Length: 211
Image 1: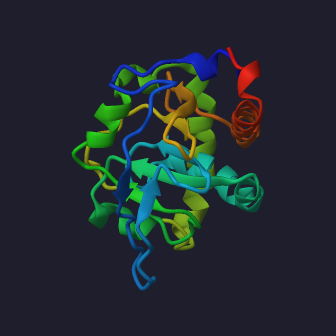
Image 2 (image 1 turned 30 degrees about the vertical axis):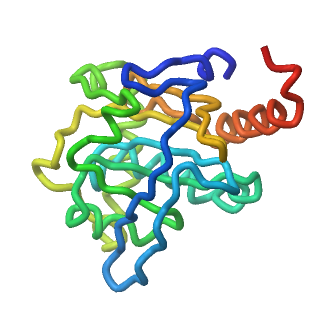
């Protein structure tokens, strides 16, 4: 986890940088109450800002279900989940009803550029990605047949070659840890997220111990 926390983004922001304050607008699922505006940074909590690919992305769904299963644990650790897709709101609405955290549409990739999150055809070609891709398809087919999930668009906005990324942002806006994925399923696990949050809290409580 230590080396991951030192990875720097190719954009303007990196570990140790301060994220300018902004308010993001979450996508609302059909028939749901509009979500409140999403502050980043959050004045009261750490923000786990995670970048995904396109709406309905099978490997994204596979990973997000691990977040959903442990969302209460993540919230209890003082972490607010914020998930960004490079899809427009109209593509995302049919895919987010089961998610208990805000989802942000960034079809112009402004946030992706700001945080240095990239896309490459190699995202699908690394052997480490193959098993998760197969698992995500096996998981997704029955759910689609039962109407629990929807297939992605045939030509999703922004393409299929995006890479995932994770950023942990402190209430003062400082990026305390980051991971830029090298393939489509290269992101923090929940355990890694909780470890990064614990390290951030420890550094905040004992600033003299931090180099």
